[in-house]
Length: 347
Length: 194
Image (tube, rainbow over the protein chains, first blue to last red):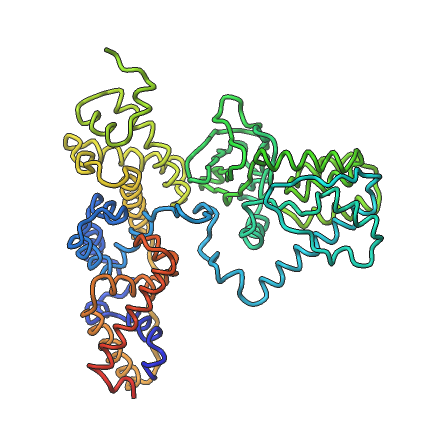
């Protein structure tokens, strides 16, 4: 092997290899009292306040070097360091409960994932826009002033369509596609994990992976036992609300802390099943901020009273359940079926 | 004069802890009110503990901070953030719980016996020993960065969070540590590069 070209591999293998006779003499599977004491000793070499000061950057240089040396030589101390990691402050952050280990910047751009995601988004835009085109009535022609962060409508979805209808669609959506914020990174596997669980595991049904307008949403879940515990965290991983409940739904109580417009939350449901404590994954939802709500109201006004275009506008803002509820009262039609089919692909 | 609740709320962590150490009961209640949700949120959100276990961890946190005449609380001295200190304590307690649980479960993942050529294995073993030997001469920071990157498989952005570096700086730190290691290896063990 040439070390010139493979230094990373060499380091990785050297660090992973057993480190001398002691390591060979005490394989992982044999846990002795002595091994127990060693692990505790590794943690005890660092005290709480020193690690906290290391993380806060308030240690003097010589002490910092000492801690770095301890961390470099002890995997369990580094495990502790990682467990106590600070949350990022100066970047567009996703809270820890929403950031599974596999979700790295490279994950999305590897292989088929990025093209697949782009296809899904484009397909959704195209499908919903066609539905709007088919059902919008006469719309006001004034172009709205939209300040919300948005993405431009992909003009390719209008190719081959009646120019007048295409223009009406643009106007209904303000010429842009309002981007429900906060969930872009979480499309994909996590939803499948929740869906694919066995039926004994509690499952949060709504709200999840969507935007909502209600400041007192109704939480719905599926669980096969009677009593559950609901835990709601904010985007700082702080407990906002927790309650023991029965049944399959609960409306957020008036005396609970108010949910704030524009913020991301996540909740999970837990239950004791056959003596085991089982919990669902955390599922996120986000409250529309006031600016988004204003844009939504404008778009709904332009969409008129027909449920289909209104549902499309709601979906474009990420209000999936509200769109579903709107469609549920509509008479059966191929268009309704198509939109419902599209919504079925969403969480 | 009796202090109003608003006054207590408005105090920063350092002042609050100072008041607790001076025996102010209202401050003590306020400190518990501030820290408990964070501790429970961490224990449950980051470590997946059930409500009962999370509450036990919180009780241990209180014991740790309050025992020996609040020595652990006094140790904080207002340096850095109180929330970081609490996070470190909660993390230690949760890890210790996890370690105890793992020890009570027999590990079935015994290392497989290698069927490789013994000579090749010996040569590789020697090569690894050489690399570890040279790594020991690197600075503490370089050793830590390499351990985080190549032993713990942390991404540069994660290393940055642990060491207070921007992602680009963390990436450079890994690159520089590797460069220094390569340079030392080249000097002391040129045969590795032939």
